[in-house]
Length: 160
Ligand code: ADP
Image (cartoon, rainbow, N blue to C red; front, side):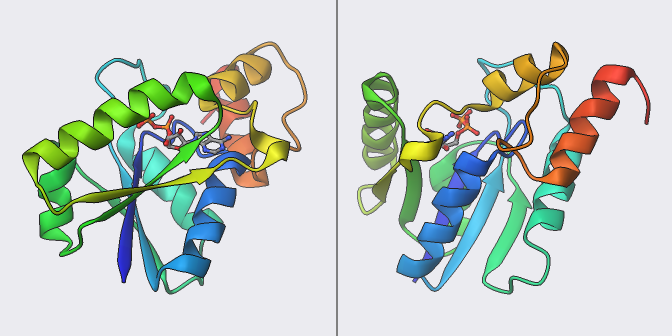
């Protein structure tokens, strides 16, 4: 079975990667759906985010990265699956995640959202936190892969 892991991934972190690797043990393939989150200001463009995720999973045939725009249930229809995976870090994620899962189900009754509990190591980790640490020059070595670290560093240096 195929599962969609939707998110803004701005940028992808080791917390996301952990969820993706664990999803691969449960599903035949994982489609990472990169999209805008209207309530967030994004640092990287959708294409930049897709490219960096492609690089992280290069050679992994059961992981596909796609950009999507619009409602998640429509993307699921296009991809011919009714399975969505999301990560849960803390109680604070729960309310939002539950609301989204219910909204998606109200739009398409056979959609199922699966939640994976965050790895202990990454339960504090978010893309915004990584950006903040990188912006102020702190170490993000254990938080993101090397290619993402370089891209963040370049963004904040204003270097391409
Ligand atoms: P969105 O803007 O859609 O919330 P994110 O990229 O912030 O996109 O998150 C995508 C999904 O990954 C969400 O379900 C979020 O809870 C989960 N997630 C983010 N960081 C972590 C982490 N460190 N551990 C586990 N899950 C995470």
